Length: 510
Ligand code: SF4
View (cartoon, rainbow, N blue to C red):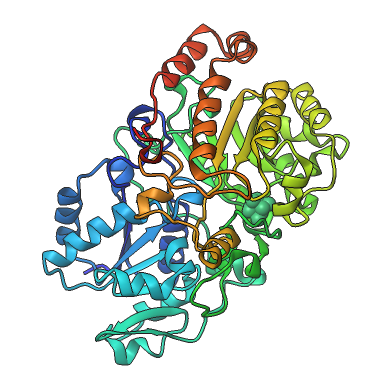
């Protein structure tokens, strides 16, 4: 019997509507890979079942779980992008309900942003969940796997978990996350060899369209890798740092646990080497703030540049817009094979932006920064948010007009949501705002997406504007002309086809 099976659940039907068939990315499951390798390093026998990548039906996934018969079933529920932890609960819970219906005895534990944010609520609501981890769960998992028996008497001794003792939900004392000085020891890399594949490693995973320059054929093989964990900022719309949680408040707020940890360069470059040796050149660097701390990113980029002599790597990374002003940085980044930077611009209105970003930005000239990035032959995936608390029609238009002026090769805009784990979620509860009726409603692309109102706008007005701007930008002539000249006619065609898929929205009366 193996000790733990890490299950990466698929999304429930309809979460991404028709976009899921061809357009949405399929990411390698970072935390399932990290936890699997960590447990292996202390002697446990583990496997990964990636329901999303293998496109398994729940019945097929259940059959595989029965066949593997693990001692502990570990659902790792973070989603395809950092904001999708709650959305992914829909598919996860459907599968764990099916497991319980079939009277499988192995306990089910959940690790992921939703249960970190709302551990008590999750256990009260979802009877198929036996245990939750209240943070990243490395040490809790080790300790659980060392228990003689997994029952309430023993569970009460494991820190950093929640569990049910008959009908009563109990949280144990908080557990620490892996400290910086032990990162390469207790989180010693990625269990890449446990991922499923069809003909070659990583061929079941695919990048976002834009990362592959809008060419379907370049999307696989694909992998995502983190070189650091967490973020030092406290943006109110973001729930990234909930993973570092060190208290038992019923509603966790990510901004209370902001911190960053880095793997040493000599250690993490070996993980890139493994990917490159296995034939992967399309790579996402998932770090929330890759270009923040030069002590780490400069030597790493230098080492990546040595491996990118023929410009074969196609990578992307996140950055702040104000840290890439450092002289020479952009050329180094480009030589490392980072061909796209994903920049959180959020709003074209300074007041709206500063209100929620809590010191994230120095006041920079966004247009000039983007120009410099383009001059370095790096494309930009620009991220914006409509419906931040101070947004009105004029400020949202300002954001959209700025996005057209910047004319970046990638454009992403979401309607602000009360994501569990974010300050906006806590505020929404306090303000008694309407929240989504189910997990899928927290998706940016679902039929029943339920965004937040602003001080001046209804959720309907925000979502309607977001969807119209999506089409408007992707059919904007200067944008399509740019795509055609950079990536060819086919790429522009692919974008035009994508815009034919219209998302249906319940709150807009579809
Ligand atoms: S900068 Fe803000 S939005 Fe980005 S990861 Fe950090 S807290 Fe989240």
